[in-house]
Length: 132
Length: 77
Image 1: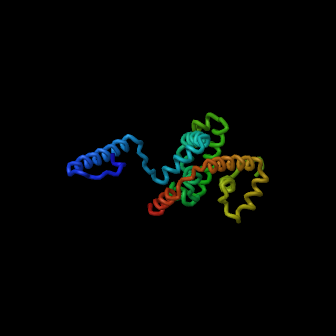
Image 2: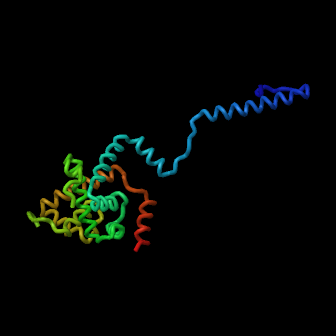
């Protein structure tokens, strides 16, 4: 109705056209409400989503690795997360963990050793048994 | 060194060699110890494998998180 040019010949046609305009507007709102809405994710979450969708195999490996790291004894896990995942220097990690740099290094050694063995299929390393 | 248990200093050197964080002035001595010891050589291979695995999966925390953690440590007791 609104797409075509129209001449108003009588005054009583104006309320009709206004009603059509209102109905058209309401229809557009209803149509929009039925469509899925997209919301922009924060930058960090977008990156996570993109990486997991782009590389499902890597995501599966990451989950396995995460499970192995989670099974490490607390002190070993803290050192590995601080240095290898968070990216702290040994000095920063020592400060955060309240220990010496040398201790961070030896714990990191044991943590990586256990991760390597767990990835090789050693069930004891995977369970975190024989800790410390 | 060969045939005996490595010292903590040697272990830490191997750990740092594996992730590239060993200061240059300590690298020559660390490599010499690794070459003398089959145990240290095997350990270095193992350590490097895990470091490579973590880096390949790109699991590093965002810089913002690192900065936050470091900030906490610096402002802590």
